[in-house]
Image (cartoon, rainbow, N blue to C red; front, top):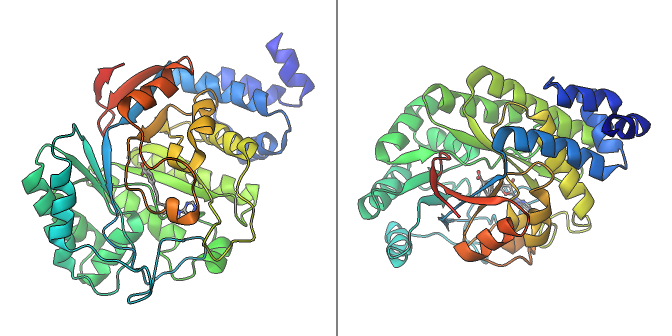
Length: 365
Ligand code: V47
């Protein structure tokens, strides 16, 4: 019965592959992006989601710290980055950072998520000292910090290899690496939107180096600007190939482009259809990624909830104090309480599971 529905929609061969656990090709991905049958794409992604994670939907009680928005790259899609000395440029001192951590010591925070820009003159030791001081205040807390782009930058500042830099960061308290800075790997896109940024190839190299050292990381894709669906698929397949090599990625997070206050303001924000389809195709192509995250801060609560039936099994977390998306016009709340997150998950018919950064389960809701 189901098979016939998929056949009639021209998706019969993809249905068969998904049912039998075969890997999808780039062409299959293009077919999925191009079909108007969104519910069928979601149905397939949901099969994989339930096969991998059942009804579990993960979230984390986390704190975000954006230590500075000063950045030498100034990517066109970013509303957060500023030149040094520019209006709205900010830099937290080490004691500002300590205070931010201290202020929330009474909360059961499991992860501190730290990202900034590529600051032209913060010294190498600033990054190490930041981690050491946070660890001194909250030793039990996992620190997920610095995108692959920042790590390559910190290595350059310190005139050290990426490997040495990672070793120093881990010694100072780094637990894992967030998925930012990947954008779209295509050189065409990077040339137009972020010519100063680390190349896609080098981003992957930093991630794989970390994985070989036993450091886990995430991966993202910024979609909904000037990229083609083919470029999205090349990005996904490059990640899948890297994951085949190292197995070090925990989670993939598609990030929907928010145009407000960016150099690409004339582009319309993504629609719910594209958001759900991108989540679903990501789940289907990235067959070796354990988790797909619907980042509620970017998607909004409602689309993120529906995404839980379109391949996503993670909502990120409580967040608070997020700047990157809100400076680009996001209208979502700045924080969700544990109860709110669990409510979103339960009313989607799923089981809330609070996790730590490495997906160890803390408690079932
Ligand atoms: O790298 C920048 C993106 C990323 C905009 O690893 C934008 O679990 C949308 O990577 N509209 C940083 N996106 C955030 C990030 C992240 C967030 C949550 C969880 C994890 C994780 C990672 O935000 C940047 C860039 O790709 N970004 N500007 C914008 N205007």
